[in-house]
Image (cartoon, rainbow, N blue to C red; front, side):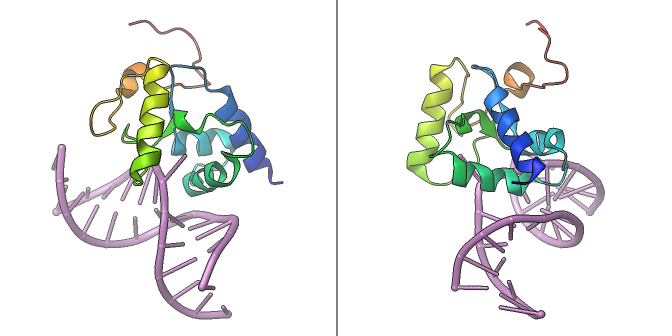
Length: 109
DNA sequence: AACATGACGGACA
DNA sequence: GTGTCCGCCATGT
């Protein structure tokens, strides 16, 4: 398995409840700043088998990127149950809910 | 091998 | 904010 994949998986698992990360962020920290699409692929293939909190991964715009309605709703629900506010269009306030493993600290507000 | 696709990102008009 | 375009790269056809 490529180190990128391992890193990405570890990062995704490391996302705390009530926080989200976006694909590019994960890819960057996993060692490939251009690997957003690979992160997508990982989620597709691993989300069922591994216990990855895939619902905590969104796109850089701060929105749920899923097109399929059922899955979209599932992610939205999962996030809301963790305390993440999701607007109607799947929008999320990144300044509140984005998790950055480098800063990691408590920023307040 | 060539071409299309995707739960994407960033730059620019 | 919206729409277009181009870059990325593993997979599928």
